[in-house]
Image (cartoon, rainbow, N blue to C red; front, side):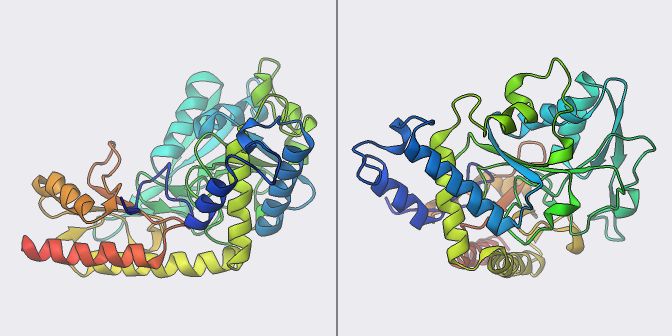
Length: 362
């Protein structure tokens, strides 16, 4: 069967050249007589692969030397716990800037288990009743240990394009879905966390980029596998890491560098987003509930005029090789995730289908 255009929100599409290279090396990696998934994570070969991957990430993200890069497990939800366990002292307080489903989930994890968390509702409705980010609501509370945000909300289709000024309070950001989709000034953050399964590698790998001065503050009962100090001390090898995802991440980082880095990906992603949103805005059969200035470039959430057609729409789309368009269960509707690996040709195919489907049901 030919490959489909995969619009899933995660696990999601990976660059085909990366997949092909992994396939060619899977059984025999660089003449070792075994695959990368069979090798010791402490052996010389994998150590080189791991170090190269970290070096590439540092290069393409511009990560300074005073930040550690930790390759972990546990996913984004694991980091919802790791952040307060590492940064929130007993009796302390943290600010959470809520812009959608995942920032709210992170807030609940902290508030219900680890201490006082203040939820700042940071979206509002514009004159047309569409959701937009309210940056003015992103105010730090006095004495906050940190402030937390999610730069791109995959469920809601909302993205932050400005950062709050948190002063001396460390800004912690979940960048799982927009990591490497555009240039980013790492020094604006105390820590960045992201799951690999959207723009980097297969599911099962989470990467934390954390400033040195924020390491070593973990609570006594923080599990060792979530303690940033332990992970940093052991070079992310305290326990057996997800070696295959780590290797795949390295291949993805090489691909990103080869095409021109995050600057080129920002250009491509903007082009794809403008094409797709233009098709939705230009056809009354479709609608999006997110205001233009807050629309995610990589997760386009939209609805059909007639929701009774949802199942039929998805069936016909899949028949034409357009997969993964069903919206998240929280909001329903449709969602097209157009991450780094999605070429413009896939978006054009979706736009063409949107026009033809609307024409059939006008």
